[in-house]
Image (cartoon, rainbow, N blue to C red; front, side, top):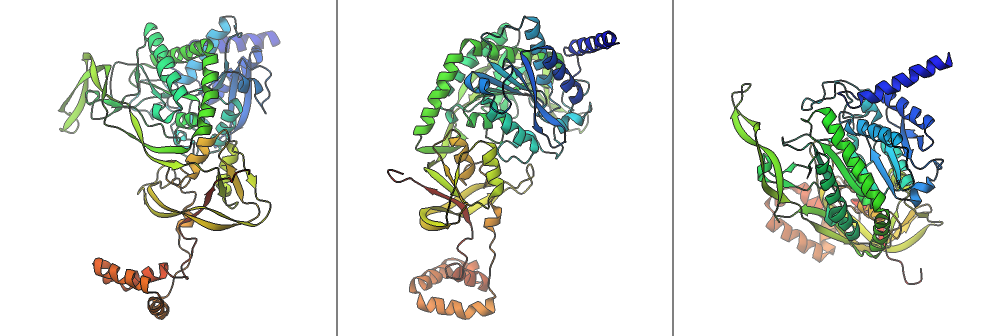
Length: 570
């Protein structure tokens, strides 16, 4: 009976692997069954259940060449060059799901030469809820596979917007995986949706100006040229992600701004060389899978030959980061224009058979190969002096939970105390009018910064910036950074005034305040003279005086985040 069962298991998995090059992709349950079988049959392959997803089923991590490593430490991964590949963040884009299995199958059949292979971590299916929500119709713009998962997770979150804010259980599990492995190189597999062109594979590389110089040089001057050369040699030309400047590629493309809300932006913030792989949705699924498998294979091949370079660059990056005095942020694309060779299709506007109006049409019978504008230079619009530490109120449990998940080290105050520190008061911001991934994002933030004596309670948290995840700490705790925890609404309660006044009661107090404070009276009269709306509003005039009175609550718009510098010898 065991022989018969074994025969059927072998036949089943042979059938599954044979289908990976066709127009199908495994379901979540089929996929995990395959990985469990691989881990059982091959000593060099381990499968770990790493944590929960919002759906209730677990997220797994497959580790190659890290056999018998500890799930608590993954010591081998941390000590050696490590690549982490994330699949199924958008389950309707399953190219990486198939490509990783094909790569593993080829590696196993090659004899499992592990001597120089880096440690490779593969997340088979990150968005479990999306994988379970399976159909063949939710991607109207895509050529295959026959059936696939859905973009939103069980909470209907786009998990590739969740890496900083961490609204999902998935992201807490991802953070556990990421910091356990501390990958040197990170790949996130996707399928694009946009213009039409000849390429099967495009890639997003981290904004170079945001990277440490030595990592930026290694990625852009060494790794990317290797990938471009070898992918072309194997039949798949590469081009940077086609992020359009205009309606069609002829108007130019631009480098994508990889903010830390995205997988690769988060990984880049942690000083991993990071790519988002974007195959073209209109190419047949088997071709997209092959292009993805080649990109993964060539990344691994390059890493095998350049492990010392990678380790040296990351070590130098930590030293560079430690010496940073100012943190640049709000990176904006400049007007500097370069050019890039591009293989596209002629595009015209023609009459639509559906609407009778103009529609865009790409003509595959009119391909072209020409130079197009390429905008790839970013500049930081702002910067901030990096403090030695932040002091955060212990009541900010949601923030502390996320700092814990990202291995941020801090100490709690042992006693109530007072310190003179830098405080930030929010004096202006814009808020999106529509919800975005469960939030109303703040932007265009303005703050008043001043020195003040602040009272702290026992248990409040001192967070030094002189530690490994320095740029992560700054990016989430500085209110003006684009993906700060302030921007993501974690401190909105501090923006609401809790006490007001009754005008008929405050009238007499306001008159007395003006009588006893000449500078306030002067400021008040000037405001009335300059502002007609103010002059005609009794409430606005009284509120103006109230805000400048002892009755106005000092905590309004003041964030529970303070900054300080250590004194010499501390």
